Amino acid sequence: MEIAKNMDLYKKLEILSDAAKYDVACTSSGIDRKGSGKGMGNCTAAGICHSFSADGRCIALLKILFTNECVFDCKYCVNRSSNDVERAAFTPDEVCRLTIEFYRRNYIEGLFLSSGILKSPSYTMELLYQTLYKLRHEYHFEGYIHVKAIPGAPQELIEKTGFLADRMSVNLELPTAESLRRLAPHKTRKKILAPMRQVQLSRKEHKNELMLFKNAPQFVPAGQSTQMIIGATPENDYQILSVAESLYQKFELKRVFYSAFVQVNQDAELPALPGGPPLLREHRLYQADWLLRFYGFGAGELLSEKRPNFNVFLDPKCDWALSHLEQFPVEINRADYYTLLRVPGIGPKSAQRIIKARRISSLDFADLKRAGVVLKRAIYFITCSGRQMYPLKIEEDFILRNLMYSQSRTPAETVTYRQLSLFDDDRVFGEVPQQLLQAGV
Image 1: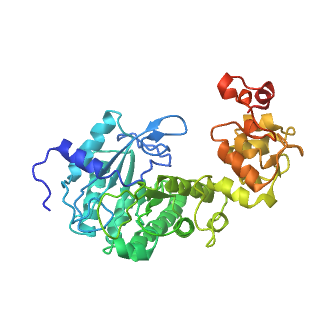
Image 2 (image 1 turned 90 degrees about the vertical axis):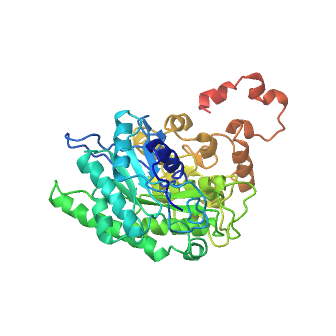
């Protein structure tokens, strides 16, 4: 289809920002980098686009496609070549003008730029490079830029673009080569992994140069990420998480993003999904991904071939703990850092606070509450000085029922060995027993 001629910039922005919404591999910097003082903007570590950073700031990126024209016909993609959709394309100067004007108005802090494949991967990558070059050298923008590396583009183009971007990403698209062959026959796993490897090796090379020469140019300083579509193909959670773990280990990725499949095309090869996109499954994969990156878990610990999918009713960490009750309860005042991390309700920050605080004195449950421990999950798996917070049974069925029930009730209300009456429900009468207030529940 011909790209519309003489289309005004606002209309292009409307089309190409909407076309970019299915690409979730979009984070802001993750790196602190000061500007030179001669241009506009700098790069401050922050959270995801249209979310909040650790210091409370709302972060926004201009998230657009350079064009939604594409020579590929991926069956899951709204921009595939066989779809009859309105097409548009920016020029490099138009992207630069939008970025600068939005930045000046304090609408954004950076740019996320992806693209459909216009004519060829090489032609498209050249346009992306020209855009970033103009933005950095002609418009003097020193803020955050995340750009897509196009599989199949020449290595030298990706290399030149990497010196202009803060982060690059190459979408894996689907978890296995077989699924890619079935739904995206124009793409191959080999072509997708090639630029990933190039970015990884170039980052290492130029990081060594930076150690020797402080003024050496930085290559993709915020690292690279990727995205997998979840639910369009029959892979189970264990296969998907194993692929993510391999990418972290072999390619040193900063993030793997999981995108619940949204049915935008009618095709016999695509699942019907009468219940809509598998958003809960996506959520469980993100939780598990966090365990891989920050809690020291392996994919083989969380799932297996015999148990290949996550429990939809429990987060993966609680689910793992219930399957390994022989390792609990953990004594808070003696356990090492990595053992504490395996306790549901204890995260890296609260574990560090526990390690630091117990050097001064033994901790009790009120201290854990102040340290940020989520007691409604943790109390089933811990002791303080050999004592439990309540007389609890370390049994899988008992803990499972209470964990699921505690979504709407406090832990102490669910822990009972007698039948509750209406008068026991503090939600009805608005009073909380004094002993629970003292315990910090």
